[in-house]
Each structure stands twice: as structure tokens, then as C-alpha cells.
Length: 504
View 1: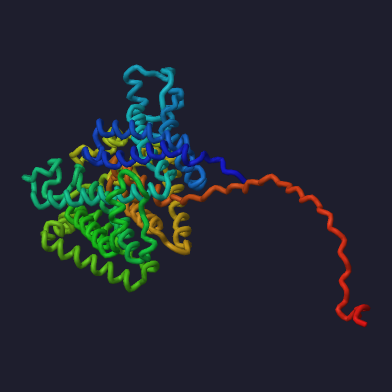
View 2: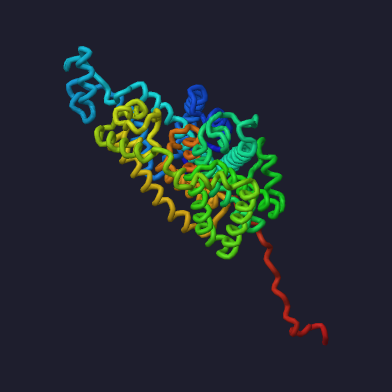
């Protein structure tokens, strides 16, 4: 059976283009307020259009992803398109939640025969939300389609970005409002990195921490001859030097990275981020323990936690602990936002108000006790169902089922390599971000949505199977026989016992 894939030499240019463009996207995503501004978001969307050319020209993801996941992706992309389809006004005004808006339009002279209207209440916001889906979608499809070697390099790049953000957060926390490294005037007295909100930085670092712990565990639990992580390339000189260094040096480096990320989470002063980081350490100890040895895993986690706690006390942990006080827990109005958002969700279900419409439509349900402008529900699930209705529920459930079904494959592997540790860490990071979505809106931050998509691509990556090639049949060669040479008749030998007649 011959493979239908093109030869590797014809894909090299496209592979390099996708790898370097994806790496540039990962580097650029958090630089300008986490990508949550029009100009950086537009840049990410343009890069996504270029990135999507790779999976379209080489649709490897169709073989590496389960059918349920492909159905979920299709529904996610089709949802805003469905909400933008025009329908007769007479039907539109009878849909759930549209009665008040139909009366307002009638007050301005819009009658029942006014033509067509889309399902979304604010079509322009739905168009913008659909375009914002392109960067994480492109990152996920490219990550699933790339080779294992390229994927490892992207994971190392992601860990490097998280480490730099954590170190910047520590500098900001120590310097206060006067430091020149603070790029935002919000959340003074905390570490925010290049983000605007401390919770968004904590979401990034909480995702990265289990992956970094997985890399540390892979150095402890793998034999020396199995520590080949990089191939030759332009951007892998430093990585090659690291991969050929001693195991002790690698353990020290990744241990320092883990401690830096943990301290960055702590001094972001995000209650959800700190709690999820502790959960990530616990899950990492459980999942990595049976591969590197239970005792070694326990000692590793204990040493890691003690060093992190000691450094946190040295820098100053009291302001962080104040965030967990009763007054600090009750100071925000998230519970009121949750309750009122659920009320609005029920008004528009099962069709939703339209993706991207929450900030404007929620004002109708906002209680008087909340005087500030509410741009998000601080719960991604409530907000997505508020906007997307029943299709959003189906997408969330499909992705959840596919995530749960992907775990047994990793645990049944006879031997874990570096990519396996990365995949387990990525799976834990996805879980932490999904839990963080119950109290914040990290999926609406372009940089965190992109990094979440990268980890999803790592987690669902199925590896590469060499194509089966039929052995070539060689034509039979007939060798002519040598000509027969006539053999002269042989004289019969005289037996040695015969008598010579001349002896007498």
C-alpha cells in the first residue's frame, strides 16, 4: 500500500513557514495587553489567515483528531455564521428574548413587513467575535498537524514566554507603581506582566506550570540516552546545547523555571490562580509519580513547594494572603453578575443573543447594586451559553467528552518520552484553564486563548506513523547457462592387483 502523502522534501518549505509563523504568533500574542486591543487583535487575525493555509493544504488534522472533536470544531465555526443568517422580521420578533427589541423597533416605525433581520441582536459584534475565533483555531490546527520535533520546540518556546512573564511580574510586584517595567496602570501592587489584569497573567502561568513540571519530571525519570529532544535547525542552537548538557544542569534549569512560574502566580495575587496552581502541583505529583517513582515524585514536590514557599516569604507573602480574607472575598460583585447573567441566559435560550453581544445586552439585566460597566460575565460558560444558546452547550459538552476520552491513551502507553510528559502537562493545564473559566474570562483574552489552543494541540497530538510502502518488485534476470564442453573418454584404470605378464 502506497502513501498518498507528498514526499517530505516537497513539504519542507510549507512546514518551516507554518512553524516560524506560529512561533512568531506565540511571541507576539501577549506583548500588547494580552492581544486584547483592536490593533494587536487585527495582527493576530491576519496571521491566523496565513496559518490556516497550512492545515488546508496538508489536512493531517483530519486523521489525528477524533470525529467528535471535528464535529465540535465545525459547530464552533458555524455558530456565528448561523446567527448572521437573515430571517423574516415576522419570525425574528417571535424568538425568545426579542419581544422588547421588536417593540422598540416598532416605536421607530419598523413594522412586521420590514424585511430581514439576522438572529444576532448586534450583527457587527458577532462578526468581530467570529474573526476573534480564527487565531486560536489556526494555532490548534497547525499544532496538531506539525511534527513531534517542531511541537516540542513550540512547547519550549511557550515555557520560555511564561517564565519571562513571571519574572516581569516579580519585578513589578517589587517595584510597585514606580517601576518602569509596569506597562499598565491597573492592579497596582500586583504582578500583571504584559497583561492588563492579574487574573489573565495567573491564567497563563497556571497553564504553564504543569507543563514545566512535566519537563522537570522527564529529566528525572528518563535515562540519559533517551534525552534527545531537538533536531538541527536555525533556532535550536541553544536548545541543542541544553540537550547535550548533563542531566543535573537540565534539572536545575527546569527547577528554576518551575519556581519562577510558581512565584509569578503567587505574586499576581489572583485567588483563583493561586488555588489552581496548588491543584496543578498536586495533579502533577499524582500523574507523574507512577512514571518516575512514587518516592522520587513525593520528594520532588516537597522540595519544590518548600523552596517556593521560602522565596515567597522572603519577598513578602502578607499582601497576597490578604486577598483570601473574608473582606477580600466579598468585595467584588461576581455573584450578582452570575445570577443576573443566568436570568438573561434563560431569556434568550435556546438561540442565544449572538456571539460578542454580552457587554451590550447584559445592561438590560444588570442589577442596580452594580454601578460599574460589566464587559464580561466573569464566567466563560455562562457568557457563551448566554450568547450561543443550545449550540454553545453542545460544543462545550463535545469538547469535554473528547477531553476525557483522550486520557486513557496516554496512560496505556508502555513508555513515556518527552512528548508524553508534555502531553500530560498540557492536559492538566487545559483542566486548570477550564476551571478558571468558572470565575473569570481568560478565553476572551486573545493571548490566553491562543496558548490554550496550543496546549490542546499538544494534548490531542497523535504522533506520526511512517507510511507503508510496498517493496519494489525487481524483474527477474535469466542467466544463460555456460556451453557444455565435451568430456574425453576416460581409460579404465588398471587395478593394482593385476599381474604383469612380462615379470616372467
